[in-house]
Length: 122
Figure 1: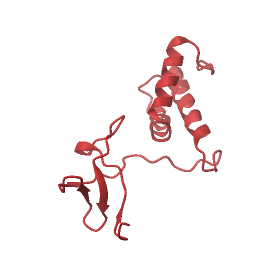
Figure 2 (figure 1 turned 60 degrees about the vertical axis):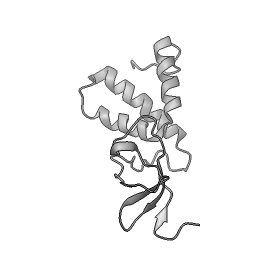
Figure 3 (figure 1 turned 120 degrees about the horizontal axis):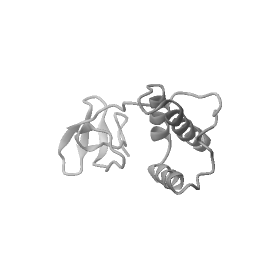
Figure 4 (figure 1 turned 60 degrees about the horizontal axis):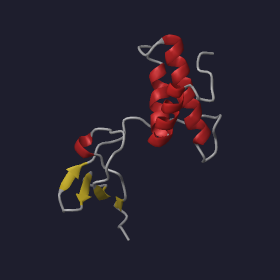
């Protein structure tokens, strides 16, 4: 059992966010902000760059609908305003934070095939 100053955490190589991160560390020491690696090498951890805030429409623990709504809102926003419209980025960051990448990939495939269950042009 880990001591009170350690906990299990996912560490991403080179400190950059990746679509499908690999787990390198097994423990993190909170007092020194270092990760204990499987080969006893230490690596500095990086904080998350985005965490989805509370949304009163989705108060429960299951965030599936929250994920879905942000995915749909992002694509509606991009179609209506274009990719350069900065407020669309909030929806993008939210769905990337909440949704498993396999779901987003499946929905992208459905959009390309024309079988996505929501009309995004409205």
